[in-house]
Length: 54
Image (tube, rainbow, N blue to C red; front, top):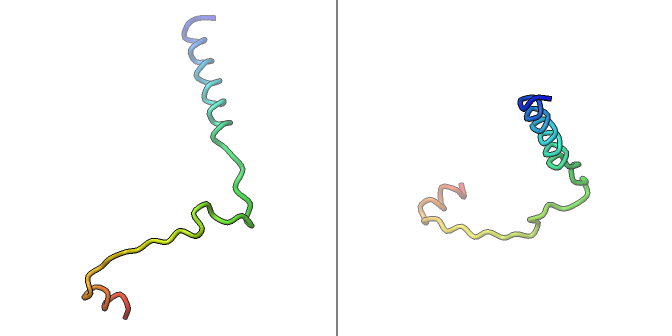
């Protein structure tokens, strides 16, 4: 086995290993999202607030 072939094999094996670690099953549909209950306050000028509320 030459150096080029060994390098290509290592690259292939490491790519498959990374793909196996990255691919995870989707979360269950009944589970709430991780950020459920987060409250965000946004401050905007009064003129813009009137436009947004219409």
